[in-house]
Image (cartoon, rainbow, N blue to C red; front, side, top):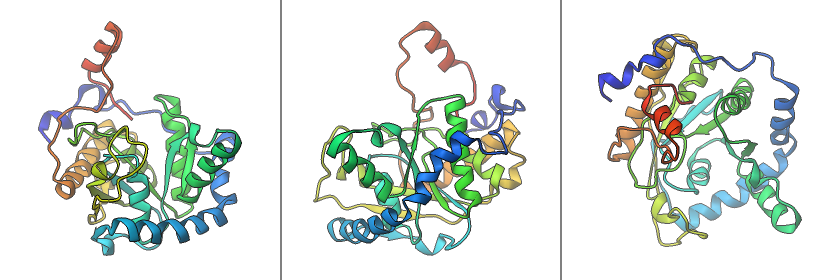
Length: 274
């Protein structure tokens, strides 16, 4: 990462409003299905994990780097829909991650199948978006970490369509600085071949590699309410992911094309992306 990337003017010392220290009733209700569905999750791990290992024969490196107990954040590159299956399958402990609420809102038999599948692999329903929606999502993950669980996040924010590694958003660092949880960087290789963007079904011929790096303690960069600390911690995380994945660096955020003058101005002006 370049020095310019670690000193964005809008991030320097303008703290992000942290999520409330007291979890709201709405967030408790959103997070509670994970605990209520623990049996579904255990059954899912018991079936999906060995099946996925049999089909894809994933190469797993650095498993000993993963703490077996206590809170931990897996920070990974993001190439494919099945990344959120590859990490839980490869990890030596249960992992939770956020998934679009629409995966849980379906009706009828197909809706039930979708809901049960995502619950079985540790997914938590969340409304996607920026601003307060992003803070609410981070608060759900903070609660899981405070319970001693492991969560997986993608600092790039969304899947890379061209295979390059994009600049990290600061939400992962904010969560780590806020909770003190160590970050285990993850490099995923081959998941885009196993299930390219737009594919409805995964390929059975691809070989996937999952690399777990050494845990990172980002708390030395400062407090969670420091924009500079969040940026420095994020850049350290992304450098570790890059070392594992070997991807070409994009040097920019992974954002959809701007369609209006206001959107174009907003993307050009330096501001923090969670």
